[in-house]
Length: 129
Image (cartoon, rainbow, N blue to C red; front, side):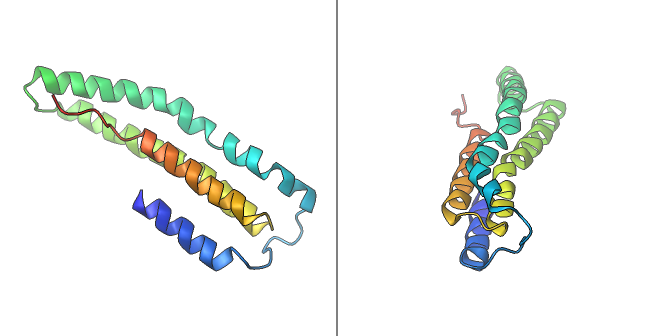
């Protein structure tokens, strides 16, 4: 999560006030920046259900084995966490493209917040039993 914040800050400081790098983009397309950023969050939201099932299975197996996790279920959970984390970065990636196309910096900052909120959704906040 700190990496996402660091990348967003670095991109904003470097490209935030510069001229557009993609000069051939029609400025009318920048009107749809927020819609695109929010649409980029949809895959991560759908995949969250798959991650939650794997998390629940891992927690149940750990509680049955007195706190010792099942290696196969834990590996599956970690794979699903990696996929979910990658999907959580899609809004930020689209925000970067939007910023480089001459869009407003506030929508890029919004895309960073959307990515951070998605990233936090993939963290198990349940207290150990």
